[in-house]
Image 1 (spheres, protein in one colour):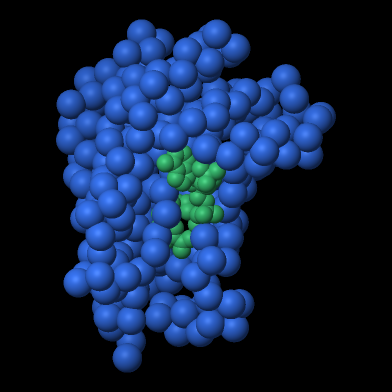
Image 2: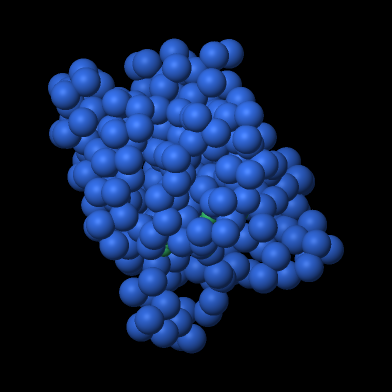
Length: 252
Ligand SMILES: NC(=O)c1ccc[n+]([C@@H]2O[C@H](COP(=O)([O-])OP(=O)(O)OC[C@H]3O[C@@H](n4cnc5c(N)ncnc54)[C@H](OP(=O)(O)O)[C@@H]3O)[C@@H](O)[C@H]2O)c1
């Protein structure tokens, strides 16, 4: 499949964002990738010299509105279009509610709520001018289905706001042919878990899912490609749970 689009991806130095960027450049898309780590973004370019013309980077914290504006300017200057925004930057550190600090709550709010909100605000005028676009918010299964062994109120109130943002933008900008959807993963095997647990403990989380396995990067990439391709033409305002069956019901 050849993808002739320009795609902005936040949080693309690791995990899902990086894997989505890799799949997109290999399919022919232009990508503007963001993260706070300059070194990791440079490493992505170094590993993709064959696609260097298709890649631009914006280093910065996505909670700062200037980062969203820089992503918009870079995409328009380099590629003359913004077809897709993927609000992916974020993290997930399970922590009991009574132990969450104000700084941690502010961190989730800044990256997830303010970051996705202000970045969408920066790019939507360009999408309106060009007659349409697609926004994908990477939300979370935990918004709908809290799990006792992974207490996550702080990160999930922020992800919940992102799910709400999806529906509001979908309705407000449907008339402009801008589609807005959420992909809500359960446990996907990414470097996010490296700081939290060893591989053996991560594998045990497979049992949380009725399908009794962890999600893989390919499972997310497939939905992204579907949503930004013709498969997504008549889909907006939806939350697509890529969750091994968790939100369908309990298997325990
Ligand atoms: N993996 C899962 O099981 C899972 C489940 C549900 C939802 N999610 C969500 O999926 C998204 C991707 O997660 P992942 O598993 O791929 O994690 P990851 O491997 O840790 O990657 C997270 C990315 O976000 C970037 N980032 C974090 N805060 C940022 C900020 N303030 N500004 C700019 N970039 C920022 C990180 O880069 P820098 O550190 O260089 O900035 C990194 O590139 C996250 O939003 C996460 O909450 C993941």
